[in-house]
Image 1 (cartoon, rainbow, N blue to C red):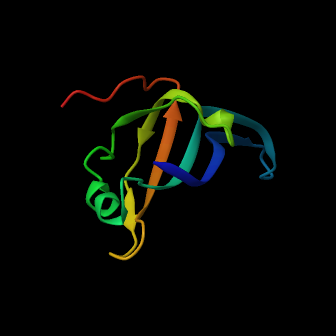
Image 2: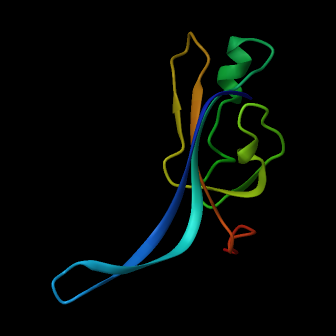
Length: 115
C-alpha cells in the first residue's frame, strides 16, 4: 500500500455559556480527538493483481488500524486509529485503484467494540 495523500485535523465538542445579553462568557471544550483521511494505492506484482487485491474487507467501520511509520506525516503514527463510515475504492480496470480511508482517534477507544 502506497500513501498518496493524507489530511489530519484536531477536533472537539464545546459548550458555551452566555451572559444575559447573549455574549459568550465561557467556553468548555471536551471530547478532543483527531480525524484523518488517507488516500492509498494498493500495490501488487502487476495491475491485474493490484486490482484483485483492492478490497474494503479489512476497512469496515469500527476496525482499529495501526500506523507504525509515516515519514511524511509522523503525527499519524498511532496504534488506535478507528476506521469510520465512508471508506471507498475509486478507479477503473486500467489503472491502480485508490482507497480512501476516513479515520478517527480518541483517547477512550483502544480496541474494536465487541459484537
